[in-house]
Length: 246
Image 1 (cartoon, rainbow, N blue to C red):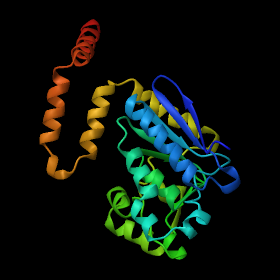
Image 2 (cartoon, one colour):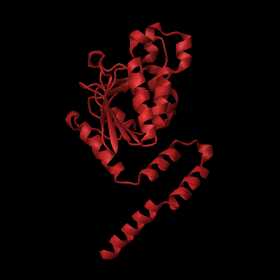
Image 3 (cartoon, rainbow, N blue to C red):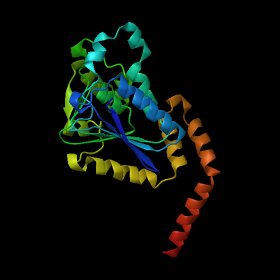
Image 4 (cartoon, helix red, strand yellow):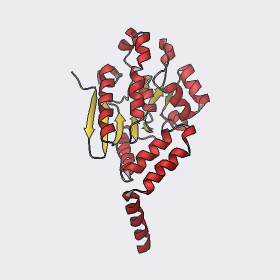
């Protein structure tokens, strides 16, 4: 059976490449299962995750052939939604490197990332209503947080597809890169993350993901833990010694 998710591991990051080029990387059950397995690995051994596509496509959507035969009981299982929540809640940051189509479930997987970068030729949006269904794997609540209620409503209710320049202007991606430089840009972002304290990064992500009602208490508790960490002492001492030598 073809590997639907190609995984390249290193000490501080994992690159996961969606790999169904014959189906434009449509997300099927096998890919969802592979994402769950990868999440289990990264929950146990936290590292930055880079999600990317292959053959000039991030993910064209969920697999329509599988969606067509699903019924109410399948919808209530949240097959894709559950996997994307798990991706979003990984301890370390998730970077989506988007080239070409990121539609439907592909867009929702990208929305689950902490950081998104793209190419000028990317196409992102949620055309589900044109197929008689709705975006139900995170777009109706994540997209509102990303672009605001008015723009989220326009995208989801009209099925509008944005190109790279529009996605950048709307804040869906933070930067655009040539297709052949996209993965390098994702690695450069991962390098900056790797230079920082992993625990401080994890705590910052936890605070970012927390509900407004949990603030500021969650920040104070997490900061209290960091104030007692040996790494904080080491890094601050190094900073002060370096400044003293100037």
